[in-house]
Image 1 (cartoon, one colour):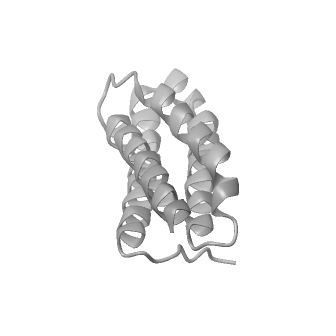
Image 2 (image 1 turned 30 degrees about the horizontal axis):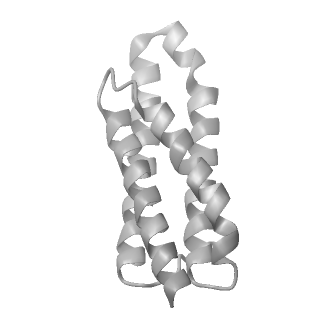
Length: 120
């Protein structure tokens, strides 16, 4: 039981860090976002082994995949900023909204004590 409570605490901390990053990504000039994202990702990578065999494992997998996919999308769309401001801004806004949706949906399921349903 203590392990599950610890996983709940770490999962909540990780989700809060991810949420801060997602919201910061929507705010122009929010420079702390990438650093917080790295901190959250490291927490997830370090603590995910503790979650093996529990419903928390799906949340760790969900958060790690979300960060990796968002990071790749941000990198792929970065050249748009060099071409024109508007296409880069629109691409990053769309990625940030998707990121925010993934984090909020994960937090809702975590608070309900439900695993994440990872599509096949």
